Length: 326
Length: 228
Image 1 (cartoon, rainbow over the protein chains, first blue to last red):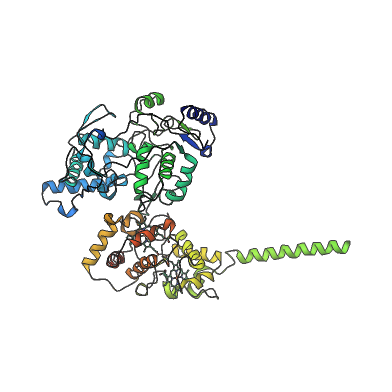
Image 2 (tube, helix red, strand yellow):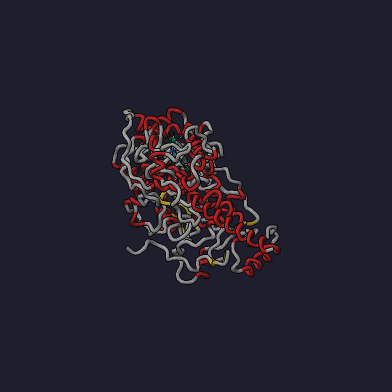
């Protein structure tokens, strides 16, 4: 299995083999990355926008620049929601994550989908929902998918505060431009995902914080300190992070925490594939048929939803999406 | 022939007895109980822990002798192993840890983990500016140096997380400062994934002083003696 190349025939044989391998564990090894495939990335079509040269560097203003005004209050609230979502936006979330788990340094860190860079590229057309989205609509998506919750209504204080914070961070940056550090880095496409290697990397580099079972860890007072990466308390099957390419880019640039850019591309791809080959809450767009949800919203080389890995058909037995009934 | 057989039986009996004796010795119930080692040592090079770590494991702040009470037992055990092997190089603790049997290390780790102790009195750092600077490093980090906030691994208020991320609340500023210095000079080299070696290398002396002052100022009024 280890030598599946990008040749389509070998690839097809590989899929058959994987299917035949059925209930065998991760030890069966790898999952080929489809040679040519348009990836439905959950990010805006930033490709069309002017790219700023790599060496230009934008620095968002510091907290001390938050004005002492009504607007400043909204910025501060947005920042509080952003780094302590659990305690400041409880009614809209359905897992144990914080916005700042995937957008480090409270949304400031480049290559960790910083808020200031995201602010500049909206409104934008998104294939995910087929229309031009405002920045607030984009934030709604984060609540529904990444936070496995429910979208605050447009104009809700929560969204206005988050938008205020993003706007504040983006001060002086050119709108309609993709700045260096926007989104997550895009790693060169691999020939295959090696789950066995991913599992190995996970146990060596990730399990210390996120736990061998991917469930994260809490401090004695019950606060989640290390976020869950799969299972019922993590992001759901509609989240951007459930696409292996996003996860790999984030991991490469930022993990192990405080040691970004120390993994090889291969390690980042394999461990991202390993993480995204585990069960998580259902895709909120699921209406009862796994096959239909997969056909309409999934597919592509970086999305394992609806495929069978290590004997588990992903998405088949997911817990329902959304906050647990109170 | 007969004689030989009896001999063999004897041999068997003796070796069984030897095994029993060996088992007894390594049986924790048979070994010295941790409270008495803590109070008066194990009769070998492991001298009374309490003379340096306090009667209730509260530590001796101004000497840089750390608090042990309420730390995770797995963390304490790992540190005793590391002192014994030398991967955490320390002149005081090396001979002490080496003189403890494996069972004694385990039982002492559990013992101290279960203790509840008030914060030991210490010379307060009365420099509000320094503490405030330290708080900012502890909570927000210095990201342009690639340094996350300490609380992102040690939890808010330094409560600690699980087996590998020790509680900092209750430790003295002297001990926090000593530990960071030990990572910088490489004498403390047993941290998983070299996480703390990396963190310490990004701090200069004034930042170490600040973050040590902040953690030294924290109270110990959180759930104690609990291993999650």
